[in-house]
Image (cartoon, rainbow, N blue to C red; front, side, top):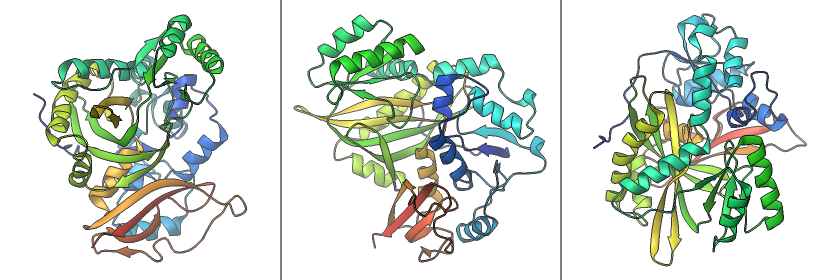
Length: 398
């Protein structure tokens, strides 16, 4: 049995890189990669997110930051993650996710090539980051667990076989490209005309060699289990995240709560004993699949679906072989949410007529305790300039 335990702290100083376009970069598989403008804007606006999930002594790559905002926010929330260091060689590179493009981003700021993954390692990580891993994990979990879970997704390399499968799905299905994130690019047969869906899937098979298809579910809860793949090949459970999605599964926000409260919320659908079994089973399954080819944080998205027979668990909606917004939310819940409060984290798009946003004090109108934990109020997790705003808000339940 895989022991349920939380992450031990490694005594390494990390140089963090927020790189939200990594899934797009994996699909392109190029070092010299120009992301779509919104993805680039998200990275520049969110470059300081590592302040909230990094540990003391870490640093992050910044491309110019509002020094007043950084100093005031760090003081109010007791943050001890530095901006761009002068001695990069003293830090271990820690990207949001690995790809040829994220490696290039480290090279561009002076990180030595010999401390970065080579092409062979990146090729293995790219394959692990595809939806083939989701299908492998889902199948392995379905065989190993002593209770029923949803049917695993299917991988198709032939468009005729895919079209036949889609036609036989009584409640519809969702087709996904091998690399995409947050539900973007998913094709829902209940929304997209069948001819358009098959055409887009045929294009996906031609471009990427495969497309993943899974049945639609009447989802009632979305959550994720968070893990850390260690250098010694072990994979350790680190916690839970609870999040909100649209009807098509696109991410909208994280609910900021301690793990114990998330488990309580999930208990209304899934017995705690089953959740524990999932953790105990998933650790060894991930170790078998990863086989030492990836080191770092990862998240496995899950959902609870409503059926005529009751509630059922989908144990692997998505395997994200990278850091996720769930990891950020978990760090906020553990470090910066006051006892008795509940929070939300989301990305907001600024008013196009006022792209520079508000220049108010970072903690104005917030109730923050002496330990740097938010009781009530709304905080910008990154400087409130540019198009995208990363928001953390809390409300006291007391």
